[in-house]
Image (tube, rainbow, N blue to C red; front, side, top):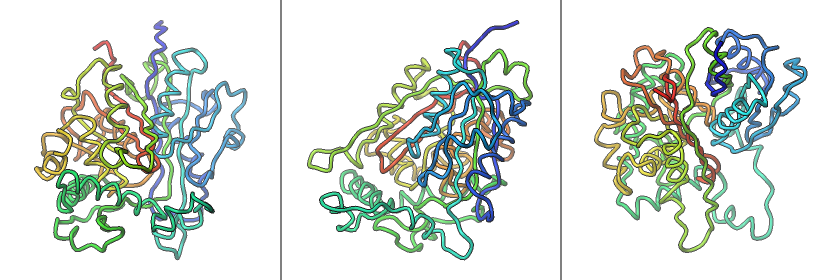
Length: 390
């Protein structure tokens, strides 16, 4: 019998997404973990490790172990890297499995910010932190939430490289084209560049169609050893490489905020670990909280030169039929917003060949990004349907 302890992803659990009311984040998390276990052909008692991303509201925590009636758990932790958490959880789960700390580790993210009768924009209104003194100056200047802060980054990129709103719009249109082929996507109706330009301004230069969705739901993944996965229900997804980078931007002259992100370092580290080059990547699943984020991440990973991201996305390269298929499920812009679990889940679907109408024929190597805070935290994964030795 094989004793290969190389970590692989063996299970994926997806709940319904969108305006699903009457369920708490914990309810969603338990559902997603159960679905992931069933997908893998495992029972909940088989899980001896649990990594929980508590979300922006810290709505789920280590007590999820008790809710799942897990006993004698060998690895148990919360991982808070905001949108980079999914990539970090896969990294830590892989290291735990390969070191022998645990044999089957579940990683989960859940959220339920949408409330009946309230707009999506009001979903996170109650989670703003009290600020005082110097720390309150950004808010006093109007930088109160993610759209305003990302708008500063996007405007800086525009000023430095000539990036245009229409180029951001090309990202939104491409995401919607992919989402049209994804039965799980919240937004599947076609949009045009004109629709993007006519959508209302949220935080100049970011328009409504530059912004991600808000979703209720949960995603869970289960990792185990390659040896055990060989006997399970679904084909394993192999983790070839990973990397993290947390820039720690200073709010002063000379900062690269908005121009270079943590993708530059974490991507290079993941590629080095995988033993491949960026040109070997077939599919890109990019954290796209805003259209700008997709564009700058593609630059920093090296799919195009710095400053040429606008022309690259406007060329149709990332859209269906393009040379660089990206966010093949519609991403957070059009499919569902589950932090870093959105790109991770679609990467697993593509690696398994389960994409249906949107399946990318060549999917041997898939790059996954996670971005947290306002470009503060970054994680990268390289996934494949093949063992790394192949």
